[in-house]
Structures are given as C-alpha cells and as structure tokens.
Image (cartoon, rainbow, N blue to C red; front, side, top):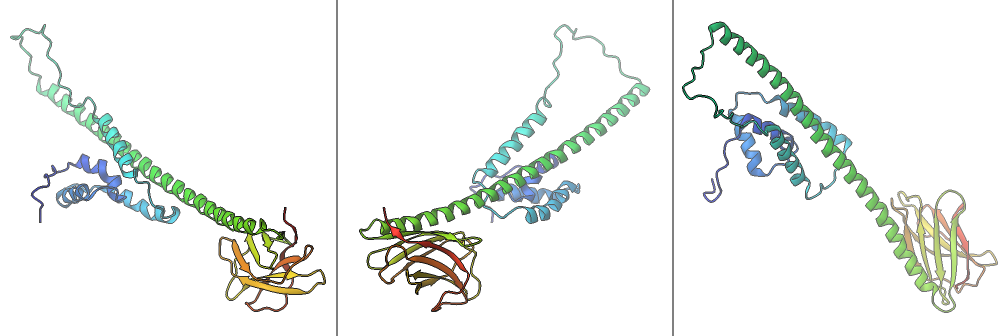
Length: 296
C-alpha cells in the first residue's frame, strides 16, 4: 500500500539507471531507489546489458573478498562520487546558444538544399554513434572503477579485522601476564620464565609462598580432540608434581591458576602435551620450561 505521506519519486530514465547500476547490483541503494530501478527495468525496451556485466563480477567478489561489515559511510561516499561524476559528465549540456545582438532581426536565413540537409543528417548520425560508443566505454570504465573500489575497501576491511584479531590476542596475553605479575609481587613469591625446548610455546609463571601458581602462555600449537597441556613443578630432587591441565585454541594463548606444593627457588616449572587430563607423569618431550627464582 502506498504511503500517502511519502513523496512520489520521478520515473528514472535509462541514463539514470545506468548511473545507478553499480550500487544497484551491489545492493548499495536504499529501498526507494532500488524500487525505482526495478520499475524502470520492468517497462524499459532496452536490455540494459550493463547490469548483466556487473552481476557477473559478483561471484568473483564473493570468493576473493572476506565477508566484513562495510564502513557506515561507504554508501554515502559511493553515491557522492557517482553524483559528482554525473554532474561533471552533464556540465554544459543544457547551455542555450545566445543570439548575437548585432544580428539584424530581419536578416534572411537561407534554407539548406536537400543535398545539404542529407549531408548534415549523415554527419549528425556519425557523431551520435561516436558519442554513444565513447559514452558506453566511459560508463563501463566507471563501473569497473567502482567495483575495484568496493573490492579494495573489502580487502582493507578484511586486513583491518585481521589486525584487530591479532591485537585482541596480544591484549588477552597482556591481561594474563598482569595477573602473573600481581602474584609475583606478593612477599615470598617466585617467578619463572618459560621458554620452548624446541618449536613454539613461551610464558611466564609465578609461585606464591603457599605453593599456588599462575601461568600465562602464548604461541602454543592448538590442542585437538581430547589433548591437553599439563603444567608441572619439578623439585630439585627431580620429582614432578602435576599442577593442572588446559586446552589451547587457535589463538595459542592460555592461562592457568592452580594450587601446588610449597616450592623452593631452583625448582623447574614445565609444560607438556598429553593425550588427555589426569596424567601422573610428564610425557616427553617437554614443550616449555623455566627455573624458579626469587621475585624482584
């Protein structure tokens, strides 16, 4: 049902539809504009092949561009650019030739002969053909430029999301380290810097005077299935005691809080990869380890 309070939009011309073809195919028009384009296409005798050409590019875009939320002002910028191009393209086309004031009002203008009229018609037809070809090429170039702009925006948006993801991982590890440092600041605490035996996996740990442990790890390969990483404290006598286990996702970060035996400086904190939780002895090789020392 038509909303009587909404102003009626003038019918679009073929040129209007060509100018709106790129944002129409990309879904960048508002509903009123899109409906006006559809209404024109429903009755227009022209095939508007430019829409088919533009639509054929969409599968390539969907395969090559990550799905990201476009910037809020993307549509406004595209439409502003299109309007600017349209104004430049039509500038001066509505100029009315002026009549010289020096021309006598009663001057007789000779009527061209039949041959002259035929020559003029032929010249005008050729000029229209050249203009149409040039205009079509220019429009096609404009469509490709606009699609390239959308593609570039999509790629930049995807790269931005990637950077945001990496920043999120770094912030998570930073929070975990802050918790470790908080425990390390307590009287009688020990600290240990864990380094990988080979490959990946580094971290920082603190052991309180009562034996409680906090552990922050980064750059660990993700666990699969029922696999876990287990943390151990190994006394100077070489006896391991399990502290707890944890799983690791695609970010590679992990955090563990656990109770353990009272630990002396010189003990080793180690991380191993196990088939599942509940291991009573470490499975070799050790993933990462470090020796405890007095904090501060």
